[in-house]
Length: 124
Ligand SMILES: [Zn+2]
Image 1 (spheres, helix red, strand yellow):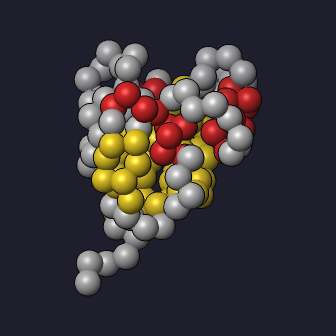
Image 2: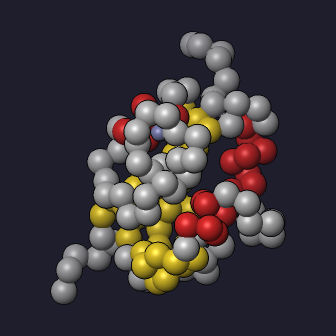
């Protein structure tokens, strides 16, 4: 097996109810309840980055910090990967709700590194 370290990750996020969340300078967005996948990378201190995402008390810095700060949000799974960040992100079938989310450094035209994947509950 390759011993090359992980450099990218995906946070599988569950939003238990629809809510409006302010994402830093991007402004306020309405997030429908359901499943989201956020793709990120850390070339150094990888595990520290992952645990930072799972920690509640921190200064809000990245777009994802604002989303995770919502009390209706929980990270249900962390997937570690060695794929390039944008390749990993583009492998996710999903809808872009917030243009530019987590994609400040993206040069691959992803549009967003957060994708809305499906409804938690079937439409009533
Ligand atoms: Zn990208």
